[in-house]
Image (cartoon, rainbow, N blue to C red; front, top):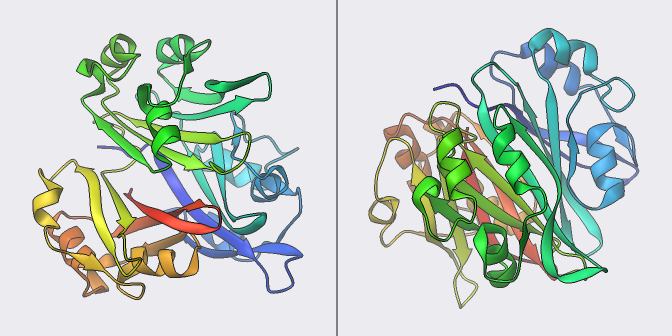
Length: 312
């Protein structure tokens, strides 16, 4: 199992809000990249994090060229070929930018997609951009596809305003590109609303295959009706079936685990060494052989409605 995502990092505004600084990251064996990244600052519109800050929506780089990606030399040496940046905002204010850096290895199967409605087509989501690794037939089928509210994976997230998870995509009647997914080996997908409260909503879709997963585990935690805790909503794990049983009766407070802190602060976070955590999530992760988590708060009108936990 070779992860499709090689590097995860979170950039947050400095106290002056004039530039972005590194908050946390997972670099694996890429220590040279980690050391360089800790020294960097990104101003408005600069580099991949700065461009996502300026755009106010996800930015996809199919090619880590030096004109945009300032760390292109080291990325090329490490075999990193594409990048995807997702800004997290509370209203008009940025709380953080998540950056994923990936490799297009010969057998890498997976996809990043950005779906959105436009003023010309306000009632449908269309594909704004996508990176498909070695799954180009799937990408070809995605272009020209549109989704109304409640239909397909992006449309379900648009309607609910919450992250939506689908498994068994190759045989799912709810996944409109099932035939192409089956041919490419894509079997798990998660759609995450980004800026759902604007007049031009955006949905990020992350699509994964067993051999080169975008994450080895995906969890969706939602805020309960009393706004007092997070409860398990949905999830998938390559090693552990029925996560609903694992987390039955578990309630996460704002200070309990990285997921709870992401809810409290509204900031995306990367945490390594989950084995050092005594929380229910830490224990469950270690049991499944996982030690890194990316926590992504999902906002709606300035409020966190859910937190997505990805375990690369």
